[in-house]
Length: 132
View 1 (cartoon, one colour):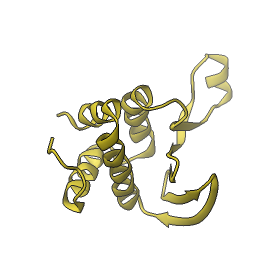
View 2: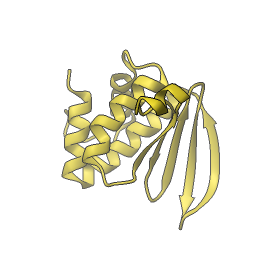
View 3: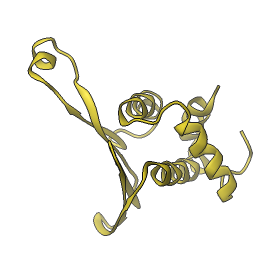
View 4: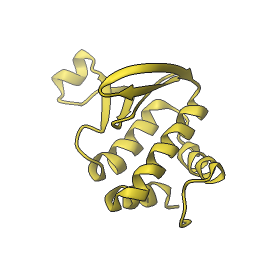
């Protein structure tokens, strides 16, 4: 992993690694919640699931339908067909942008890069996520 994650070229490399073989929300959700959910502060990664009657009766978690990554400044929401990036100031959403999955992954890479530069646990989570 490079020393600086700031330049846009690095963000695109991170996004490419996140996207490889993980093009749908369900697999992205599994990867992000397992790797990032444990390493990042509680409540930062949330998964919305659809639970059928069979899921509830068998004690299964259900199928992931949305993933939300929240920081003090941004909230990134990924659904099956598109994503949304929300800019937050003092807990209030001041801007919403609907983006494609590709752009959402670039935004996520930016959030992870910022966190990794300030937090050792986030840096380790990012390295684990990008490991071959």
